[in-house]
Image 1: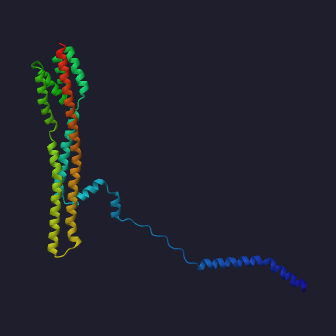
Image 2 (image 1 turned 135 degrees about the vertical axis):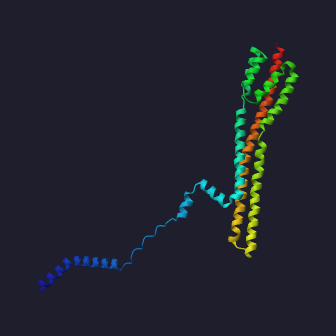
Image 3 (image 1 turned 60 degrees about the horizontal axis):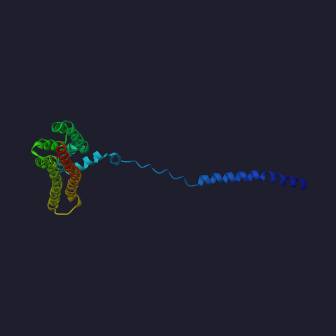
Length: 267
């Protein structure tokens, strides 16, 4: 009997780990079955077509949209001011840059020509050189036979003529600079009048009634100011370039008179 009991005890000891493992596995399966279901993945946000268009919109498209929102009736005159003003400004910039002359090099050529071939050779040098400085030199050399005083008077008189040519067209740029904001302010006033007319007709103040008129007012004003700022930059550049050319003309004219006096004394 004791042997039978000992045999049962030995069997229990051997099979107890297997039973325990099976119980643990069954408990895990039950816990997984009773566990809450995993949360569904968050939906991926879908971008609307308007959002895609807003992100992909180029600068040109934005400007076009604002131009239409500001009412082409008021924005077109402002745009014309910008186009015409830029056309005049670019023409002036090109002309002024072409009028720039290396005065030191020109004076050296004139002095060398005077020493080698006289006044006629110097005239040939100035006539074959472009720019207002060379034109002034030509006028001065043409009066050389009448004396140094006539040369100085001729240079001063013709210098005023060349200065007027350099400043040609700047008045139009100045006009467009003043006109563009005025047109923008006119659109502002007309837009506000339209907004108040809508309020009067409806008998009530509603944002939807006044939004259109206020938008036109703001967009036309901004457009006019932007055009004026752009043209003002070009205008200031042209004025600075003209001042530089005038200073070169004055310095070169004084140097030419000194060269002619030296040439006359050495003859």
